Length: 308
Image (cartoon, rainbow, N blue to C red):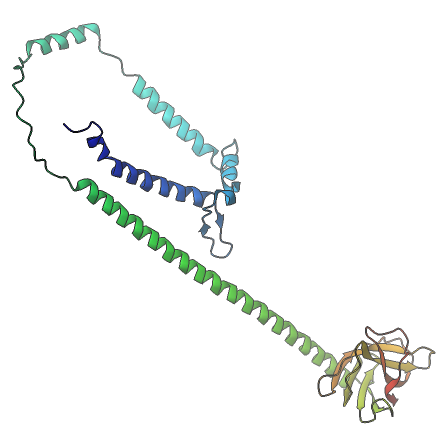
């Protein structure tokens, strides 16, 4: 005799695989339902960790199930159809007593005499071995491995697409910076051209001052209506914490600051300044060495000076 638990035990692998093949897909559905949406691809992003589940989508669906919501009419129709089906199934009456008696009488007339059981034959000692449960388990394992590998492949492709999108975003940001720089240069060129062709443009040549920058030179084109174009060459790099400031010297007591300039590695400067149209007639243009950030009135030594 075999133990009573032996034959039910053969069903354990099938039960386990059924649980796995049901629970895992169900958990995957839950992970997708409580996940997020990719902002670029608009594809679902599963959340496998319950701590990261986003209940906003479920709350949204529950809110739409209230009167006036998107799913309210569908919900009412479903309840109505289920109620009608239950009512139809419960409306079937049980057979009457007369009908029941006729059925029992006919069954009794056709009763079959069953012979007493004969002596059971000797139990065979050899039994056939069934491979079906193990084949089902192996097929389920292969399917699980296939879908697992396919999921890893899809996840790898998604990571690649995300990396490419990140690189595209970085390239777009760099392109935006370059376009902004080109736009700024274009605007500066247009402003400089407008000053150079102005009818009232005046040219001022600046010379380097002994003891500061004797080899430096500069040139300014000033128009009362359109501003000033300033350029210089051979300017030495300012000391740390210092900068060059351009001044428009008028007959008024205080010079007017046109702006700050910073020479490049070759000592060159090119700048365009907007000057007020109401200033008095300039008599000179000067460049001084001032603290970083500039000052309201010149305090440092003169580096370039030019008379109008």
